[in-house]
Amino acid sequence: MERRLQHLNWLKVRELVPDKIDTIILPVGTVEAHGSACLGTDNFIPTVISEGIAERVNAFIAPIVNHGITKSLYRYPGGTTIQPETFGRYVGDILDSLVDSGFHNIIIMNGHGGNNDTLKKTAFEFHKKKKANVAVVHWWMLCSEMTDEFFGHAGGHAGTDETAMVHAIDPALAGESDYDPELAYCFVPGADIYPVPGSILLYEKDEGYPEFDRAKAIEYRDKVIETVGQFTEMVLERWRKFDL
Ligand SMILES: [Zn+2]
Image (cartoon, rainbow, N blue to C red):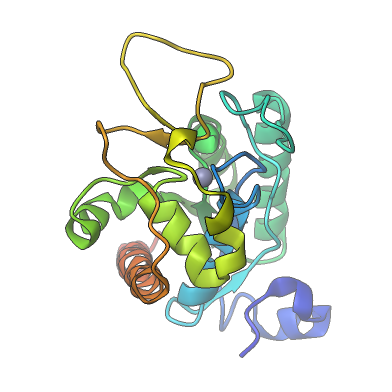
């Protein structure tokens, strides 16, 4: 069935929520430089994961929050950033609205590390106020062990993992013809740099450079959807089991 909230009318939502469907996934990302990959990488990935798990966890998908908190890559052309207070209040208002529409469980599907702290704080405040359940899923962190096993090394910002995910959606989004390993910067502890001198950020020395292998990218995307789907299912089952 159609899982995207925007594609339904209010009659359908009234018919199904909350009796048949009480869970909604809210994808959140940002617009930010990602090496040769597209500026919307952090938006396209949580969208594809949400669409991949919605049936399994019997959830609707809310429209994405696609402007987030971009920090060290803000100066690279095309990026947008929202002040943390504004972003937190905006996301908080969306969460409140979803509960007012009848949803009891909200899965925030985050695609961008700069959003983590604010989403965590916003989710906790919302949960306390509304007595609703909320989980913030940072897919690349949740999948890091699987990523290590799959590629034989760690991923990174615009690294193997993120580039494979957008390549699986559409190879044009990965920008292979513009790729140059010089775009990568290996993180060195001991310096905070604005703008950071590379739009591919590797956290382990010389590990995580993008690959442009279509079949492998699709296999990886499916494993990410499986990992996130399994985790989300477990959380929802446990909320229900404990009658929360
Ligand atoms: Zn990213």
